[in-house]
Image (cartoon, rainbow, N blue to C red; front, top):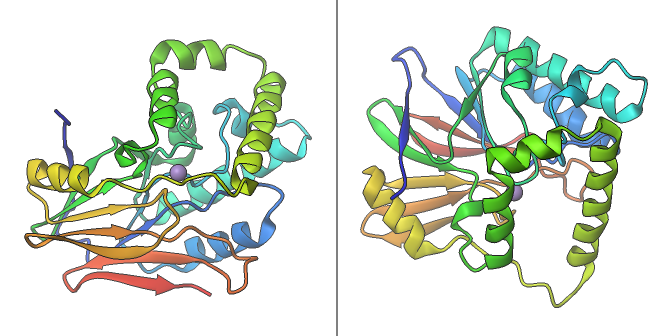
Length: 259
Ligand code: MN
């Protein structure tokens, strides 16, 4: 049985922005710049990040460290941007499969509120079921086994006890493996299981599931008045560039392209 935590929006929130899968990294400045421009100008009353904001996260000490290494500088800059944004509007963060190690120290540093996956957002009386989406990709059994392992406090404590440089090196080698998998034409990418999505929606007493993770933006009709909205990933250097948010309001859900 899945537990459905609730985030009840105060009446003053007219619009809530949802973004996910920016995969921010030092080597891809265009997307970071698009994100920075967005944070500085959004008129939303709250921002909810549905995971994979960062391409990789090896521990909150990577953002706190004043090391001159490029990666440390990048993470500290992202922290500062989030901190300034969170002074202006509430910012919520749900973990993705890339940045599941974002922890309470980073949240406190930036003024973020961490959200459980899934969480029901109650906005103007409407219930929106929010998830990163990876846990609903039931066909990806190998990944789900890995996920179950790395989400335990024991695994995380052991990993975070390693020196920062060792964790960075491990993340780099995992990234190479994942790039190989992306290049392999026989790789099959699992999608969110529609039956599981419907089950969740019925349990959560919600009609719409919003998630990211799959990088396949679409609105899926699940029947019985239920739907699944998939967020776009971001890549500001792609042709055409991708930088899209989903804006929730009394008018419903609206995709907004930023570029
Ligand atoms: Mn993901």
